[in-house]
Length: 338
Image 1 (cartoon, rainbow, N blue to C red):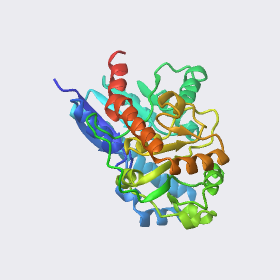
Image 2 (image 1 turned 135 degrees about the vertical axis):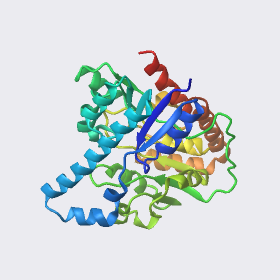
Image 3 (image 1 turned 30 degrees about the vertical axis):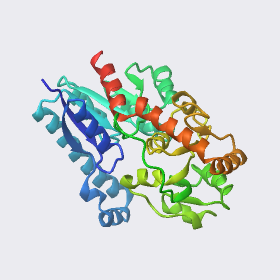
Image 4 (image 1 turned 45 degrees about the horizontal axis):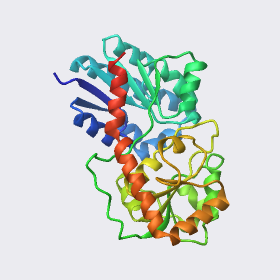
């Protein structure tokens, strides 16, 4: 008999489509529950809401949260599911998760945020039967500081099929691409690093805060999720600069996306997982500092054959080990063995 999963995430999440699709590939019956609220997310309503006093704003937000929690519990009870799988789910109350668990349903959270969301992480981790984090440091804190034994490591993944072929690399449009937001104080390293490439063919996509930096002239606007792979596949070099939190070890999504697109990845050295999940110099290339970034960009722009060989190897490594189907298999092997 096919197992039933109530899959809860925001429809805007980049994880929603690939997780839902790969759950179905693995043979699950998937009932999707949208954790976002169209009315609450309406930009005009949000603008009006933000003008209200804090206590009224919190009250309205709380009412919407209560509605989502009631609907989630009702759906889980009505559809007689085997699992609840949540991506992030900061608006799901621990009480709701425990009520669903009490029905005999295995509750799972795959939480995609960093230590900047530690408050939510420590609150939610103890509520679920199984809590998965992409970061070994976060996992260590949950186990050693919080004494939780329901937490596991599960890196991010690429939305790629096992039978995928290397994308055609002949129609390059960009020499150097960077996709990511800029937030003052949080992502200052992105400006520092990319400034060293300011005299080269640099292209940046992300939020509008880039317009407040010296790199504004390279900014192309916000990119839709479905456009990411296309940009990467048309880029000779993709640069990834993660949050500069030295304690953290887990990679963001970019290395998996870039390699899945068949692109050559130049990655910063801040997260140890880049060395665990890929082979530096053969599947990706890691730069040491801003000057090294510049030197390696210029070198690999001039050495196309070497660059393409590394890009092909990165693609094959990701296809072999780092796709959503693999990750979800790993997840349910853990869940079903406990």
